[in-house]
Amino acid sequence: MQRFPCPFCGLRDEREFRFAGEAGKTRPDTTQEVSDKEWADYLFFCKNAKGPTREIWVHTTCQEYFVMERDSATMEVLDTTPMRKDVA
Image (cartoon, rainbow, N blue to C red; front, side, top):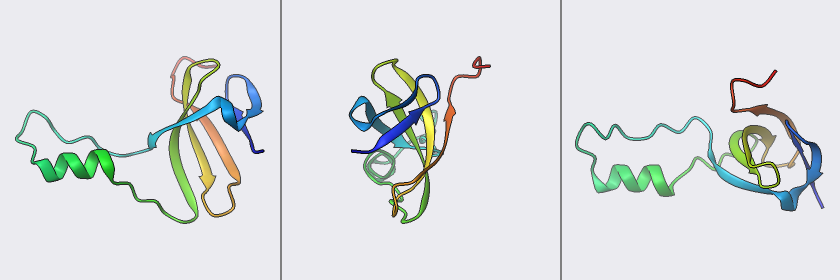
């Protein structure tokens, strides 16, 4: 069982977390015409890089979203950063 560090609650069981998406992904500009291909690429495709990655996760217990930097090959968690700006 893997344990992930929540920046709000500390080290917790992996079953308390849900993957929310790839960090840094840019949503298509909806003030302009967006093709079906552009929407499909945004919604369904991710880099899926082997090695260091940045991902958005949610801790279901405290309902807080954060960015987790981890190595997708070794599963080592490198860092977690809150997405909220008001965290001291």
